[in-house]
Length: 241
Image: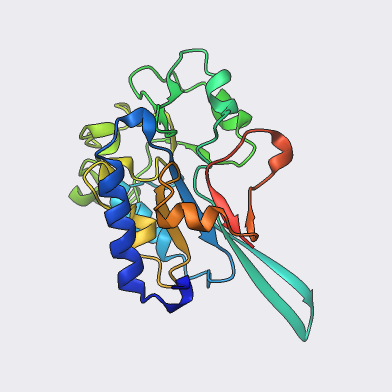
């Protein structure tokens, strides 16, 4: 059956089944990959919004921007959209430059940050050719109002731990931050927030090491491309163009 013939809820169910099957394997046998179909992306930024909500991201910290580009001249103008999560590179330059060894690649390909080790030098932000990292300056959306709202102090759950936003000094304030494909959800058998909320069904996720998975089928498409392949970073995030 062609992918176009499958209903959206069936696609999501298949991806969840793929994730849960992958979780039965040892971590070193998994390879988490995201595929984004640019022809389906409508630029709604629902992925950006859901990412902010899921990870309680403060002002200035963005894991999943959608880059817009205009083509042509009036009246023949078109727009294209490039959702840009972390590429989860197989050869990540951000890891090599970290003087505190605070960031590394897991056996399943996800790049993590140890907030307690991170010294906030931002070398990793400069080293990333995809601008996939941002710095947490400790801002609140309700700064310069009579009161910082409690919902801004609620914890996020990155890296298997609750990170309440108690003040302007405690981690992850003062740290580099990045997308992890919502690994805290994936490890519970759920889809990343950006995948489950994509209204155009343009984002897919799964285990590239499983030949039966939907993601493995999509990676075999002749439309599959990597972003800035000339950098030699071997990104896991793949685009269908």
